Length: 149
Image 1 (tube, rainbow, N blue to C red):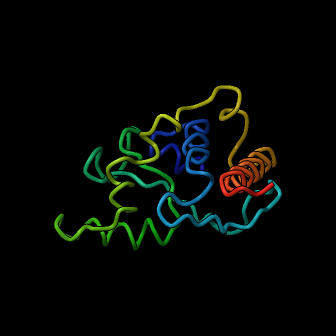
Image 2: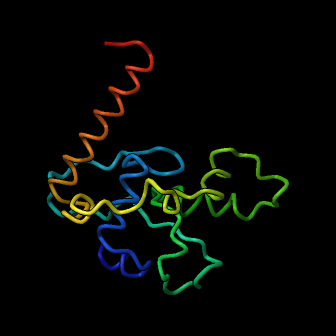
């Protein structure tokens, strides 16, 4: 993971900030299916991939400016590349268009929060607990909007 972050010009804090701003989910499909490993480094490769604009810095290394978000492997390797190859007049998906025109990594909510985003690695126990806390808040917020106690 650290090699991938280095390749795309991201610090751990910046990666965490983008991931937090996305709600700890794929920015396109909303998947959050990676199993909790209690902070133990993954035995299998992570399904999460750093997406970037290939026209910005070139294919070998990014300066971080072209990072758009964090996607699951199917969205990054199959869904988004196919969509980007379509002619502009056929690109009618609001979800994909919003992602491409206003990527999570470029939004104000993905700015690094010092003392929070730089405290831990994405696979650490603290990060997993922060993710659970964010999911509980989101569920509570959704319940409040629908009149649930």
